[in-house]
Image (cartoon, rainbow, N blue to C red; front, top):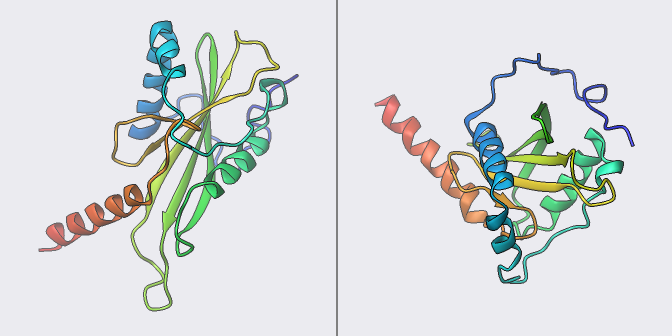
Length: 181
């Protein structure tokens, strides 16, 4: 039943005083707010399915950092993305509060070509929520947020849109051009 905290995280082990990215901070704030408001959780359960794809997430008791990473990769494969998209998935860090442990991951997406192997990137930040109060046999909860957006998505409840990635890259390109002027 032990949770694999930092011993298997990649070499980028942060200190206890980690500076969260804006997206990670938004995810944690949203999750804590959501967990404090049980009414919203009940309403969320009643949302229509809309044929959103999901995977069978691991039970809390079986979670490790590496299992979380593999499951996020499996979840990303369920998205309807064009084959030109490539991504890398990084384990970032772990944050805790009284009732939860949050494992943070970042997927960086791009569309490299032979003519332009290095183009803009768009990141999707994931948090795996390990509850300290829910039964350990229940699955972990997974949430994600797209870079520069504020809407927190629940895995299996939101259909991922390729357009979100393209919009982030387009916005960065426009900003880069404006700054270069």
